[in-house]
Image 1: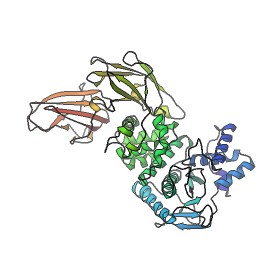
Image 2: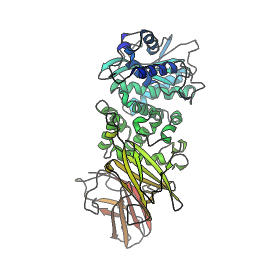
Image 3: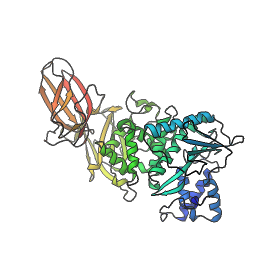
Image 4: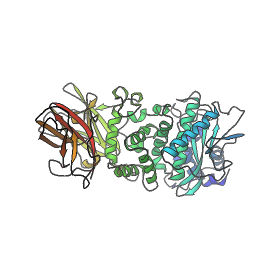
Length: 527
């Protein structure tokens, strides 16, 4: 085996105990002995392969020999080049490990991966391996992986600055034991693993952000081959525990985060986040890009919590996730006590969404509390936030949810938290029915560039109309009645709160009413 495997990663190993590296080796050898973990097929063994290589020098000579054999490029007797000339696929022609799906179709699929991830989304091609696979094309190896996993990307030669050349290994048939089979499984695995090559070849490999590597690679499966929904089979863990901090997740269950980012900010935001990865942890990089787009990770995560709520039978056609009806439902638990009678204390993990439900007057009220504490999610400073929540059936206390219900949230780190409410499986109060029926102008509104925002009014004769502005959490920021006539089609506002303060950068909600007809929608402000 090439000497590069012996010095594959120059990572900090001081935190790895003997027991940890022994457990890692046991898992590594078990998986590659065609076994599954907890009865579920491993989607990708990239993290295990990368970590085992990092600790290679700590193993005995016999263990190193076994590891090196697995990490080496597979020996095959045949190779072909994809039609666009970007990929070389290696396989055995006549053996039990030969591909059981159509190689010609797979080669075309690889070109689709390139067209989507490189040409359309805008990622750079992984760096050349300097002829390690016979030429400078990016290499895929197809062998019999049994039920080990769908595939894995092996980092190979260090390029410095925690970047590496790589190659991909895929299964030859994806038979029983996998959620998706045959050529469809091969296609999405190619999209997934190739993106790992993009990540570690152009940006960085960092073990503490492994969830984010898998999150993006799994999202690529849907971006390239949206008719293959293998990723949905792995979403259950997040839907069971949205209250867990993002870095606690495997990443396979969070592909929907990048799907959400694509839908609200575009593919460029995903690429821009990866550009920030060499200098920042993943949550910092995401927050930076959201700020560049006039928002923040906290605001984005709160809106993401709204999207995640509307799945399964709650899915709304043509809104939120395209495949929302196919997604599982959130596991939502009740408060430990009754928030109408006493404050309820919750502990919130950083970069997480906590949902709680309560029956109020026969209605189901679900509260979403977002903890957008970016610094708290960093490996060197993991911290939780305690918050107290209380409901009131009174207009004189708290922040309005509906005309008959309000809430109060207190915390020493309140600035890190956001709140959203759902009533009877819909957005509550001012946040309900937010289909934009007409255009708000200008969008986004920028202080200094613009003097007024204009909000649409319904048609019809009337002498008065009203405008209300709310935060995403439902807090009333502005309210005013206007004298109008039948021809008035918009209301102007100078974008200052009742207190006279300017709005912060973010997304807000407007509600206009004229002659009993209500229009609602969202608008953006950049301060």
